[in-house]
Image (cartoon, rainbow, N blue to C red; front, side, top):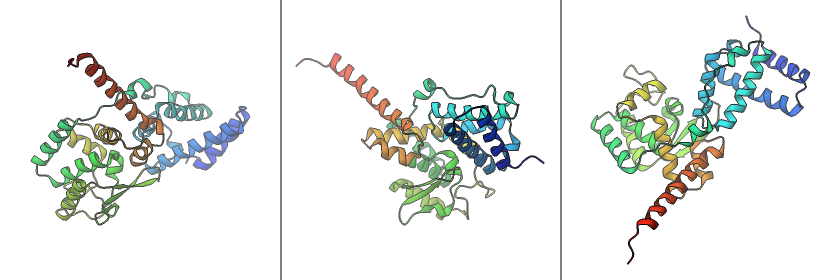
Length: 279
């Protein structure tokens, strides 16, 4: 039997103090390690199950949550320090982390591609898949959040869904008329009890199964989330509102969509100015 997580964290903070870390640093490290422990707990594990694979999964989770590369790198730094405390520094070596440069590239669907995707999904006549695509495209929620949706999270009367993140935060997102229509149609024609999106065996869909379904239409769920955010920014919705709807922890992540829009407008203006015919 390993030590209790609280006991491990307590010993870690004492070790940090002995290492000469400031009170603020110790508090920050303790807070981040507790968050990592909470995440492990949601997967049925504890700090005793410390492994390279679990650390990598946590980093991917943070990136999916929309954390900026700088923030993610700082959190990884805390976990690296913890691995030194355990005298197992090798457990945090070779962890892949998205860099700022890689993250700057935002891939979205244009209007034609969106229409084409929705047309292809509807042609399959699968109410569940149509509802999934509309929900992802019109609410911008993460795949993990989509998978954890329950039937009770969908309020068709008030046309909103309540989204719960793995960290315990929740937000309410208004539904578009189309998303509401397709969710209503799916719910009315399916046997869903608790979990909203289920397999034929009535089991809650996994992130992998949704990615696999979308692969048939040559699209990744991240692209649908990016498309949602970019559309809002393009329509002049404030960064603060987009950030709240997307559930971004770091507003700098949301600002990337604004930067992308400004760059696109600058390119269009350059062409217009250069090649506009004189009258």
